[in-house]
Amino acid sequence: MYVAQPIKWTDGGVVMLDQRRLPSEEISYTYTGYQDVAKAIREMVIRGAPAIGVAAAMGVAIGVQNSSAESLEELRAEFPVILDTLARTRPTAVDLFWALDRMKSRFAELSAQTSDLARIKQALVEEAKAVHLEKRATDEAIGRFGAEFMPRDGRVMTQCNAGALATGGIGTALGVIQVAVEQGKKLHVLVPETRPYLQGARLTAWELHRSNIPLTLITDNMVGHFLKTGNVSAIVTGADRIAANGDTANKIGTYQIAVLAREHDVPFYIAAPVSTFDLSIASGEQIPIEERSSAEVTQIQGMRIAPDVHAAHPAFDVTPSRYIAAIFTERGVAKAPYTESLKLLAASIPVPVI
Ligand code: MRU
Image (cartoon, rainbow, N blue to C red):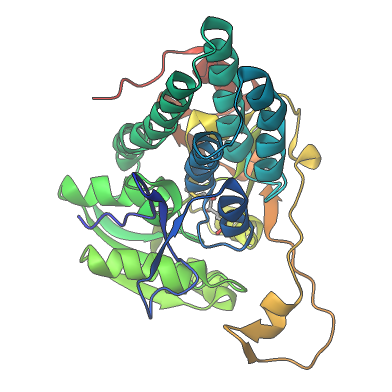
C-alpha cells in the first residue's frame, strides 16, 4: 500500500507536500510561522478535512513555539490571535475547528498548571504530533469497518480525494478501499475527475495508481452513465462536516452522485472520523459552504479555458442523509436514524492509538 505523506512535523518547521503541483511535481515546503501555515491551508497546499485539522494543530504549535512572548500573560494575549488566523482559512471542514479547540483546551490546561513557557511550548508540539499520529489509527479503523461493505469483486466509485493526502493517515474513503484490497477483495475504482480543482484526477488517481489498485478516470459528467451501465457495486466518499441528522457536506458534485446512486440502486456510503461530526447543528442547511474564486473555474493551472466571465465556485455541497446508506467511522458504522446513531458514536470510546 502506498501512503503519501502530506504533512510532517520536523525540528525545522512544518513540512507540507504541495498538493497543487501533483501529479507533475513532488515539491515540499517548510513553514516556520503560523501565518504561513494559514496561507498554505487557504491556498490548498494542504487540503482534505482531517489533514487541514492536522495542519491547524501544527500551525498553533509552531505559532507558540516561535512566539517572542516573554511571559505567560503575553503568550495568553497572543494565543487567540494565532487561533483566529488559522480559523479564518477554510470554513466548511469542521476538523479544522475541532483541532483548534483541542489545542485551545490543552493550552488552557497547561497554563493553569505552569508558567514555564518552554514546558508549554513543548507540550503543545507534542499535542499537535498526537493529533497527527491519531489519524493513522483512526483511518485504519474506519477502513476495517468500511471494508465489510465493499464487494468481493467489483467496481466502486469515489469522489474528490479522501486518501492519505487528505488525512495524514491512510485516508478515509480510500482507506476503506485500501483495507478491502489488502483483505483480498478485487476492486476497480471509478474516479470522477472532480472539477474544478481536479482532486480526483490529480490526487486520487495518483494515490491509487501508486498503490497498484486498478482504476478508471472519468469526467464528472460521465457519472450518470457509469451508474446506469457500469456495474457499480458501491460508492464511498469522505466528508467535511456531518450534521446531527446525518446530512453531509463533501466536495462539490457529491450530492448529484448520491441522487444518481439512489436512482440506480447503488449504495452510497460516507467514510469519516467522529471529529467530522458537528452535532451542534441540526441539519445540513446550517453548514457554511466555502465559495472559492471564479478563476479556479475559468483557468486550469494558470491556463484559461473560458472567457473572463464570472464563474460560480461553491467548493462543497450537502447530501441529505436520506441518500446515505451508512457512515463508516473509527468507532463503528452509523445507519439511519442518524440523529440517534451519530449521538451514540460520539459518546462512545475513542479508538486507541497503538
Ligand atoms: O477542497 P478540499 O480538497 O479540501 O475538499 C476535500 C474533500 O471534499 C474531501 O472529500 C473531504 O475533505 C474528506 S477528506 C478525507
